[in-house]
Image 1 (cartoon, rainbow, N blue to C red):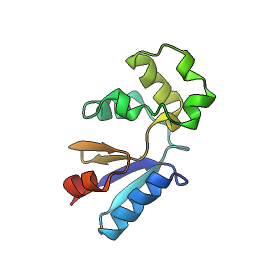
Image 2 (cartoon, rainbow, N blue to C red):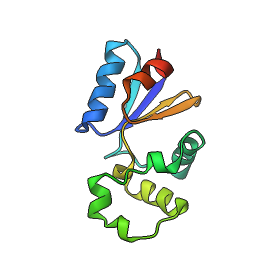
Image 3 (tube, rainbow, N blue to C red):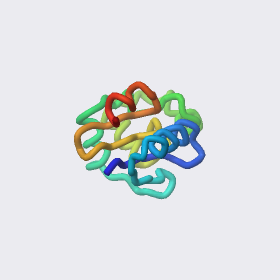
Length: 114
C-alpha cells in the first residue's frame, strides 16, 4: 500500500492525493501535523533519497526557527525533521519499501506509480 505523508492544507499534497484518486491508486494518508515520526522512518527514506531533498529549506518553519543561522550537519537535520516534521518537503510517498518520492512531479509519479 502506498503511504502518503503530508499535511492536508499543502497544495502539493492536494495534487498528489488528486493524482492517486484519479489513477485509482489506494493509499494511506499520514498527517505530519499529528503523527510522531521516529528515526527509523526518516532513515528508511534516507536510504532512497538525500537529506537535501527531504529537508525543506524553503519552508516557513525553516524560516521561523531561524535554522539558516545554524550550521546544521546531516545528523542535525535528521534531528530537526523528527522534532519538526513540517520541515519535511511534502508530500513524501512511500512505496512498499521499494522507493520514496518527495514532492509532486507528475512525470515521476507516472514512472513510479503506474
